[in-house]
Amino acid sequence: MKFFILTVFPEFFKNFISESIIGKAVSKGLVEIEVVNIRDFTLDKHNKTDDYPFGGGPGMVMTPQPLADAIKYSLGKANSGKVIYLTPKGKIYDQELAAGLSKAGEDLILVCGHYEGIDQRIIDKYVDFEISIGDFILTGGEIPAMVMIDSITRLLEGVLGNEESSESESFYDHLLEHPQYTRPREFEGMKVPEVLLSGNHKEIEKWRLEASINETKEKRPDLIKKYMSKKQ
Image 1 (cartoon, one colour):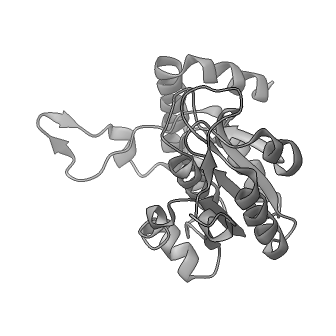
Image 2: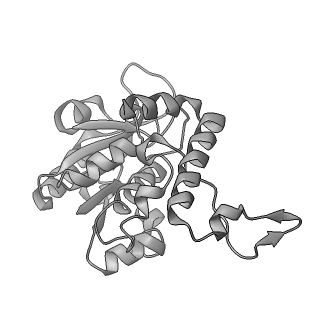
């Protein structure tokens, strides 16, 4: 799978694509990430990629020409690429959407907006999906792009090593992950639940499911409805 990140701040991603799980996935050839500098495509003699909005108002808007050419460049190199614009107006991103994108077999072109956004004509002609990572405002689309790449990459076969790992994490099956414990068995007067030390894998799995349900009820009751409807 290949990700194209369209941005005016390419240096933002230097460490991101070389560290931790993402770095390992790239080095193994499981994913490719190409950072595309939108400024490289501008025809403006001053290298500008933004201008004042028609109709007035505060801020600047990203101009269509460099964005269109950067998208066309990426589509030319992509395998059935889908163009995603990262914006507060988009569909809220969640684990279910991440899983769907990881299994689609298509490369993703992530457009990182800035300022007051991008020219609407780019959205109308080139964008397949608009996605938001939450109901809050960020400076640009770079952090949302990282969120998407990280969450999708870890779902790809061979990335985590242990294929059961992603299935036991929070939001898989609409449940939060059960509490985790490690050595020592007792810390500051608090003990690890005995069942986890029993070696009885059936009882351990039962405890983990019950703990996940309780965690979700307490912290994210909205998810319990999804879990229950899926089990019916």
